Length: 165
Image (cartoon, rainbow, N blue to C red; front, side):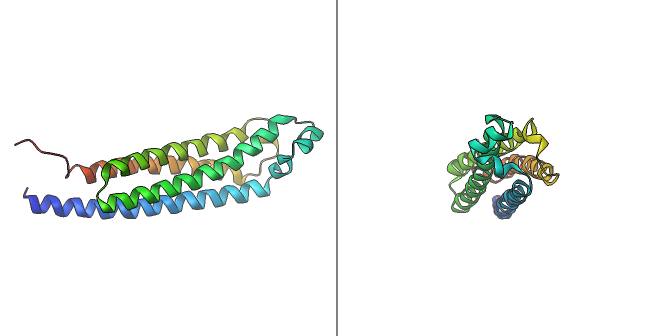
């Protein structure tokens, strides 16, 4: 294949990665919003007060689970921001920093999934709304989307790797 054809494919892959990064960022934001609605519709916000958690008989466990759920929203927003930054650095050709940002986004999205999953254990599982399970599924799907983004980024950078002559 000629060098011009390879360059054209690389530019097309770069554009595809950019669009996919935007989609992944928006999906993470929507995931966080669904999680916020699920969190608000369940009884977990009541237990953000340690006094209310102790008075309810659930103890500090439900307080910690409610707090971890809130931290999962923060981690999801951080992951969306990191994916957006990775997309921007890829457009400028800074592939090393783009890769690091993408791996940081995967870590943040994984933490969001783990923190959100903490509420599935008792005692918080007794007060969750059914919508919360959709949030957990969307958080897992967000991690899978970001893992696929790594493969897209590798395809983009394959053109720029040195070749043997």
